[in-house]
Amino acid sequence: MSKAGSRILSSARQALAIAKGTAKAGTYRTHVPEELDVAGIRSKVGLSQKDFAACFGVSTRTVQEWEQRHRRPSGPARAFLTVIDREPKAVRRALSAN
Picture 1 (cartoon, rainbow, N blue to C red):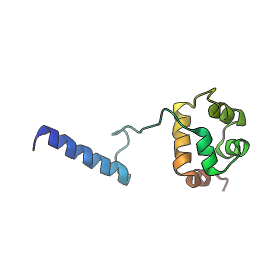
Picture 2: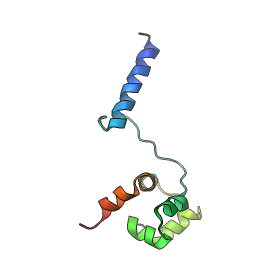
Picture 3: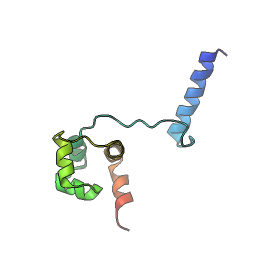
């Protein structure tokens, strides 16, 4: 097999391991979006700014500033918002007081 073919096959195997959740931590880079529609994420979960802030542990003012684009969420905040966008019920379960 050619060198390019080997790299493609290796990349496909790695993609499969990532998709299955079996890839070793640190062997790949996680994509965190540079830009997010915070208002859209909040609307998708059906919460007011105040309730969204309380539910996910940020201040109402922070949510307002993100939505008005006066402030940009940090890298970890963008990652958290991405998870909220994709799996809001899982985040709520994980953060609920049990």
